[in-house]
Length: 161
Ligand SMILES: Nc1nc2c(c(=O)[nH]1)N[C@H]1C(S)=C(S)[C@@H](COP(=O)(O)O)O[C@H]1N2
Ligand SMILES: [Mo]
Image (cartoon, rainbow, N blue to C red):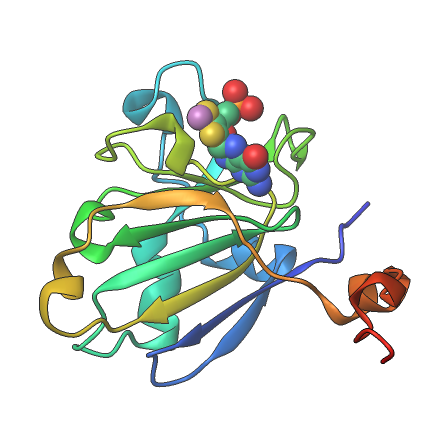
């Protein structure tokens, strides 16, 4: 039984790529023991840098933005991600919670950064003072085209004179 998901990694990288469960299995040298980093977390995980090495993070990158399937996202300074890992398998099967992949940030200042159900990872390069922005998280505040089509926009029509 194999799950068919892909996680896109793009932005300020040399080679954007999409990763699958099978690729996670192949890249996994099984050296990450999640329990040692975050108590109570068991299963198979990949070090984040294993993934980043494959896409080649550009030097100007300051933050990584992890987007969940529910539009929850966390934007985290790369300097906080040294020990970060991606949990993708528990008891030999795909995750029941946080499927397909969940981020853990052992050095992060909050559990809120542990994004579940990751679909995309975007590398970003902020300039100036923004380059030092601390980690943040929350739901993306956007309207998707398919939502817009469902909305009743009549109330927004200009008044007839
Ligand atoms: N995709 C997604 N990931 C998420 C969240 C979310 O709403 N959606 N909530 C975050 C917050 S605020 C917290 S505190 C933790 C909660 O993790 P738990 O469900 O394992 O308790 O998940 C984080 N990851
Ligand atoms: Mo949270």
